[in-house]
Every structure is written in C-alpha cells, then in structure tokens.
Length: 436
Image (cartoon, rainbow, N blue to C red; front, side):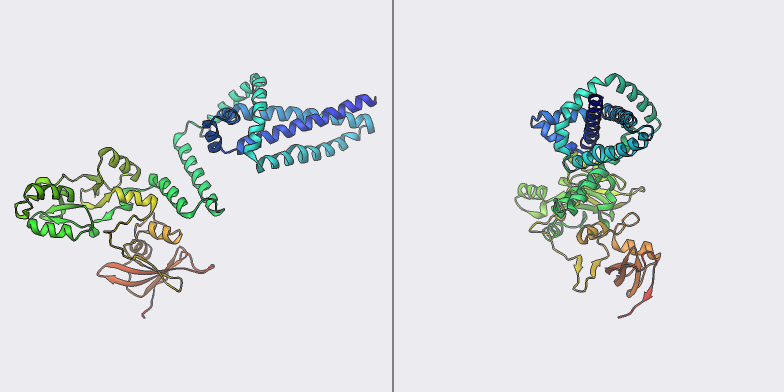
C-alpha cells in the first residue's frame, strides 16, 4: 500500500513539473525577441533556428502547449484526489482541490512563467529542442485543433489582413523604441531618427514642403547678369524659374549647368541663354505620400520637385534634403543661413516664428502639439481660434498657452508658447487682449 501511495505521489510531482515546463515554455517562446533570434540564426546558432521554426507555426506550438498542459493538470488533479480519498476518505476531495490549486498556481504557473519572463531568450533556447519533439509527437491531435482554430479565426482579422498586420508591426516597433528610450537604452536622437523613418508613411509632401512664399525663384525675363547675381547671393544650388507670373514655373536652373554654360561662352555672361540649359520642372501632387516621393526621387535620380494642388497651382517645392531632414533632423552646411526660428527663453517660454512647422517644434521641445489640421504654428492658432488674432491676444488649448507677439498684415509672424500648469484649461480657448 505504501509503495502504491509513493508511486502516486511521485507521479503527481512529475506531472506538476511537466505542467511547469509547458507554462514556462509557452511564456518564453512568446516573449522571446524575434529580431534577436533571427540575428542569432543568421550567425549560425542552431538553437535560435529551432526557436524560429517553432514560432513560424504558432498554432502548432500553442496547440501543443495547451493540450499537454491540460492533460498533465487534469491527470495530476485526478491522482491527487484518488490519493486523498485513500488517505482520509471522501472529505479528501476538498483537501486535494485546495492543495492542488495552490501547487499548480505557485509551482506550475507563477514560478515558471516569472522565470521565463525574466530571461525569455535563454529559456526559449533551452526548451526549443524538447518542444520541437513534443510538437511532432502530438501533431495528429494538434492538427485537428489547428483546423478548428483556423476556421474560427476566419471570422476575425488574421495574418492575411495585410493592412492590419503592417499597422500592428509599425506600432510594435514604435512602442519598442519609446520604451527603450525611456529606459535609457536608446539615445533620444537615435529614437527620433527611427521614429522619423516610421513617420514617412503617414506624411504627405504638403506636410514638409517649402511653401511658395518662402521659395527663392528666378525671373526668366531678367537679364543673364541679374540672374547670375541672384544665384550668387542664394544658398541654393537649384532654383525654379518663372515667366509672366511667379506661379508659372517654366524650368529649374542648376548652378552646375550654369557653370558649364559659362565655360562654353568663354565666361561672357551676356551670351547666356538661361532657358537653353534649364531643366523642365517636375510637378507632383500635394497629396503624394512622402515615402512614395522618396522612392520617386531615387528612381528618377532627381532631388527637387514642385508641389501643386488639385487645381494645378504651385503650392511649394520639396527636395530630397527635406525628406532626409524628417529622419535625421536639420541638415546644414557652410552656406546655409542659420536663423533661430525656435528661441527658448529663460522663463521657460518658447518664442517661435509663425512659419515654424508643428512637427519641428514637437521634435525640438519633445512636445505633442497636434498637426492633423495645420502644418505651421500660425496655422494651428488660426484653426483653433477660428479667427486671425491680434498681437497681445492669448489662447490656451491642448495644454499650451499661446500669446501672439507680432503680426504682418494677415500673417502671424511670432508666437510665445508655454505649457500650462497641471489642472489648467486644456481645450478651452481664452482670447484676452493683453497689451504690453
């Protein structure tokens, strides 16, 4: 009798250990870093290859774990009940239920799952060979489970839903970047660059283009000497050329083409025919996705395009450098003019030009001002205030206080911005005419 009790007790311990193995394996395999495992497999790590093979068919792995875990838990509970009844009678069922619940929760669930979460990659590499064998052994049963699961998943977004999967992947990557930045693993500048790459898919060229009011252009009807003088005083190597009216762009002049033409004319500027070596303008819709425009630049081997609206009117221009700056931040060389468009004050406020892009201010100050309805700071204030404010007026929305400093005609040229204190008005708009 004592031998039988001992064998039952030993079987219960073994079954609890198996339950712990299944629980820990599931946690480790689902929490393991896919990117790290992929990199290790590329380096020839056999264990990582086994982990990736298991994760490539998650239905089989999860089905095997659930099946094995259920079997051992039910069998362990049945043996414990039988043992308890043999020892203390029918009341032993209650004792067995309480004791087995505690044992399974502590030793078969919480403990192995916690250990697996602490070192998921290490545990995943350890259990992968054993799990691979168990998956093969239980494949007939798990195949039936897989068919049932696939049939049910047809009613929900599955791995065949490309749009949902792309969005989930981008959100997962962004979440990982944000988490690693907060923990100090990834530098803020590196995180901004990685975030800039992800943001390209959400931006249109209208969001980052140079507006037509800030474009430097050339008049085709001016004398060659005047055009050369303008180019010499400009910081740009490519300049649009217009005729009759500024919106009528007829060409783009590259300084390298100008130098070649000057050399051919024995450096006699009066002999130049500017339009003869100007390149045709390239027009793109303002709704073009920045990611697609980047691909178009690379495919066409061009670096600048004119942006037009739905009516064909020129709205601005976009260059390859503008797109790269969305990723790496401001790019400046020895010929760029350095203007302080964002000026942080000693009292914590920030003075910005009205033309400053909301995205640039958010990146510079680590703020979260919305840029869905407006591109520039002036546009944001006008959109929220529903009017063109006067200097001295103050508005508070989205948790920030905006004071209008200067206005030129109908254009806001300078704004003072400051985050409001916690508990302040977040969405209310106050327009008090403060005069200094």
